[in-house]
Length: 300
Image (cartoon, rainbow, N blue to C red; front, side, top):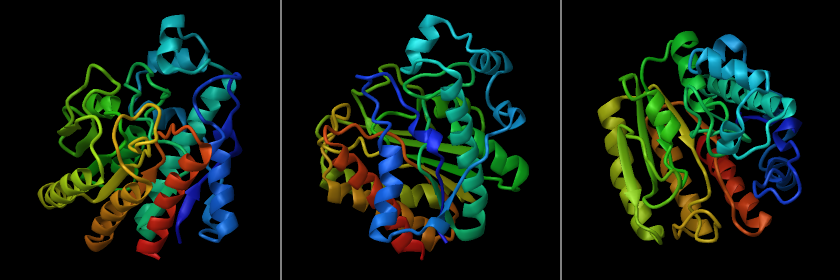
């Protein structure tokens, strides 16, 4: 069964005019339920990540400032969100959701979080709509609590997973792969174990060829026991922040490649939503829904 973390706090309201599309976190599960891709039994209400789990990755000083709402104005602006107690709780539920999805993936082969993929958060700071790095915290949990010895992060959001890359730069047990827009945020990139920086306008054919050539090789070379897949849909040509040129069909084929490789190689996979900023909310929801549909079709 495809187990999916979802909590009503994921759709925490932001001030009017804020560009982050929070409504997608409510609309996506509604769409998947309406069309019959999933049932209520697929959804689980995640717990909050514990302080101990968060502190396996994040610095105690930064986490304390976050919980006490003591970020400086500069630090708050870097996150892109107005800081509040509700926002911090949202981040803890998202991180807990990815942790629990990791447990479910080890049991069922695949699991998901209707949120997460907060790959811009560093150990000591937040950036780019990311306060806590759920990918990194869940990787630490998988190693410490589930006996996983080798992890592959497949980050296909249009923005480089800079925080994740920096966190694991000296950790050979987590291989970080980021395929992203060369000229997109963040403007100062970190060094992942493998970065593929794509020129503006890269379309379906070239993108899918590169992914099809690269990911099987990485699996053969790294022998992962778990894949964490950041499945942002800001690679679409319609995305306001993306600069790449994928179609809806191309983005779905991207997901099919990743899930098929995980399924054929019997590697548990967790996927998180990541970014998506197309002008029409329907486009964002459809692209994200395709990821869930493809996972369901591939594994079940």
